[in-house]
Length: 236
Image 1 (cartoon, rainbow, N blue to C red):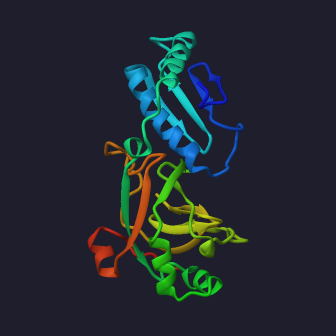
Image 2: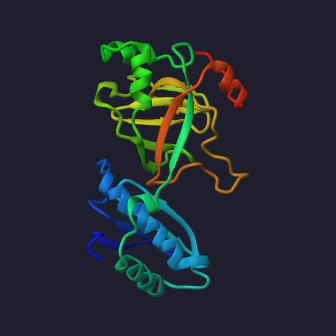
């Protein structure tokens, strides 16, 4: 069980497994790969006793059905799952490609990021598309996937004054992470374009196109393609 630091009771029907310091938000591809592989193992181990798994940067919350099992049994099952060899990163994750309509009109910080990086807008778009990003965590809203790490030339702090409303599908950058807003919400990230792919749909299974540990790569599309794929245009 050396892959984790501790397993602790989180509530009457949950455990939290720590893969590093509690509440850590340090980005680590190695830790993320361990969490993704462990998530798959626990799903298999607990089966129908499992209600949900909530991975984060350095932890995994395991929520179980307390009507048909108890803490002692679940902890034994967790130890059993954690004693098995980890799957490889390729076995535990998938590559998801997301289209983006990059636009200085619909992505108001795109020009600013290009200027700060001493790049053209086209070069900035190419740079954003060149990386396979890892999904490190999902929150603050369902489907909001924190992706990292972007090229340091595109890194930018959050806006001093957050917007009251960021539209669905807005593609954004904050520090060395990038993300797609799954629904309208307040937000202080730098907006660079729009993605037509729904990031959360409770009517579909699975609800999200990505999970923690998956890899994401963006590719550019034009406005007509964006609209054809179901995207809505939002001006600022």
